[in-house]
Image (cartoon, rainbow, N blue to C red):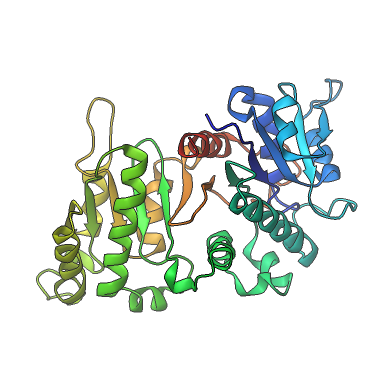
Length: 347
């Protein structure tokens, strides 16, 4: 286990992020040991109140002066490092530029701390993309966490964005999937399927997952079109772009196979008790193609991992859930799993 602490960023303070963070520290003390919240004390104190039954003892929230003090926090206590200016909590369930800026500032602080080597990993609670955009510069230019972290890491390394390609992997106990494109329109996602983008995704997946598994991963590749194009009848991207990229990756030693029909490859890769999947991971051509199968199998255990960054970043597999924010009903299982995955990857 890394001796450095793990930062959990606040997420959108108007959403369920603070509540699930509070539940994680309350319900999973073994997972959250050595973790702290990069966020806001008042928001976490309010969240602790949301999950405490009337008349029950309150969940303690402790202010840290430095990140390393997280190891000294007692179990079932929420250690918080105030990384944004103190202010009253924003209203729950409402999109606001203020909440977007707070969320962005927390991520930026944690990213920089990770790049300086001060923390072992960051686990990001959900932010709201509309609120992040409303916050204005510099956050309005980033569709989400992934792009913000990529830009910050590239700047730290003195590289251009093209020199630091990243990919999103969503994983649970049964299935892993890596995406060729992330947060773009479907029209743009189709245009983003190219020989270079598929080959780059295969290289990143091979390197990152291989390091995590300790062996070369077996990669199944989904086609773009129905039935993977049916020999060109339903589209030629598989013939002209995807299959050549797979062949090039295989020539480099990547254990990639396909392209396979998108409506069956995820079933082939799914692992069950006593029955490992045919593939360790599926490379999907666009966001919903890859994420719908994983989320259908259970949001409560899904974890988002950003591949290609010079730091460890994980997050839960769900959004801000403004409709239930402040009710104390949100489940923390995915966040707890994200913390556990971050700890394993940070070793």
